Length: 287
Image (cartoon, rainbow, N blue to C red; front, side, top):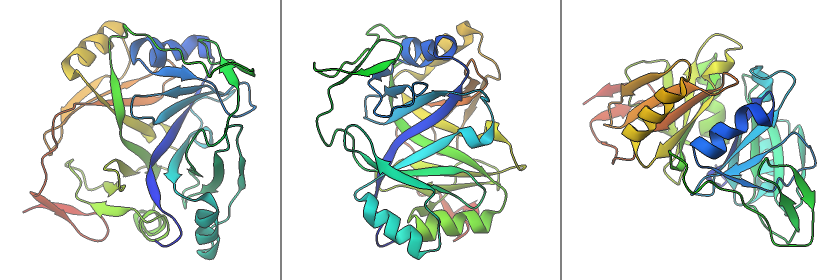
């Protein structure tokens, strides 16, 4: 779609109750680096995986409520994205610039999911620093980064993000025809999940579900050692643990974080392709 050039996922935001309760999972177990936040809201924590994609745990009075989640696509030009969205009749609910010069714009998809379009990070000097809990302030030193070298799980990148939808055709029309993502064959057995590809190889999964099902919203993160990740999560006693095999040969581990957010870890083996095809609405079959 002219005007919106997607580069990948910039970040995925999860609502949490408190940083003391939930940040240790992302920092100490999954090994994400805590970096300075570039927004003024004191409840927003910025963490980053090796690929540069971020997870933003956000302290919320209503963790688990659907409207408190959001997903941010990286784009080459936010002004061009805004112009393209508005030309398609999509209302931009807010826009601006962060401390590091990152431009952003928020919209709602047809199901009310908050979506953000963001430029690259660190576009200008900012001098912001943070402690190991992500509490950020303005400073005059080098940017800080807190990461556990001995974290038991090593997250490499964001393979996919999943959002709940209620109307397949209206959602696909938005993400395919307005945002510019590509329909790709789904590698799971259910017809209720549509897979769309981003140019960098990551994916967006649209999951048909009941209105307001916030637990569907999640990120899928590639890990270096999948079997080791299973052992670690099981030893933690995490809730709603599910382990399964996909039709592309990758394995998936699902569980809940301490605030009940759905997290998925994905194996790092090459994904099989070419044995399934999808029509223009994402319905997939074997060939």
